Image (cartoon, rainbow, N blue to C red; front, side, top):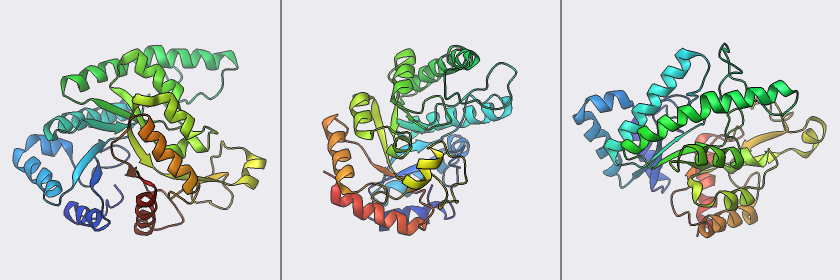
Length: 304
């Protein structure tokens, strides 16, 4: 996704030049599908073979297919498009022998007539609790029960949900709630950057989730103490307004130092995680190539 402006082959060559072993490829919705159109690949065995060969011939593997979207969006057109992309991603993963699809849990509206998502952040007034109850019982659990069945039928073992504010699964507790309600295919794409600014200790989060962690994104967050002291952490300013935001996303090591990241990778080992660490670059102070290069160098030093 970082190199969506390049053709697939050039993007893969660039990834290889950084010394990487695996790539996470976007298949639609928010990450886009610059390098992978599931619908087209599913229709053409020749295109599918060429796509797979472009990756394997470079000594790379696909760690997961990314279709982050909002399949629970109250606008039927948006929900339908996001659901279709997600289903096609699952079907493509089956064809490619990939067991992991990465996405968001989604967020419904506040009732059957809603037109926009409603992310509830507090239990009072009482109608907020009623919204949450309706969302989970009428939308979240029914949808994901069917999606888990579909994934299971097509050999996808992990629907890795990125715990992202703005969606119903934004920290470990709702992740485990959904997993218990619909099946163990629901698991965590653990990205500590979204937990830092919520005041969550990622190490405690890893230990709480344990075997429910199926994928990891490496991204950091720098919390500005002065801006946070006056504005708190629920900050809706543009991500490009770095001077005034309470926090911004950073390349690993630029929000938290080696001590944290050494503890992070050690805790991954303790909970039994031995899969990829996928670098996600959203550092607005660095170019993509600089941010990725620094992340690769930093992580190579701390990885076990």
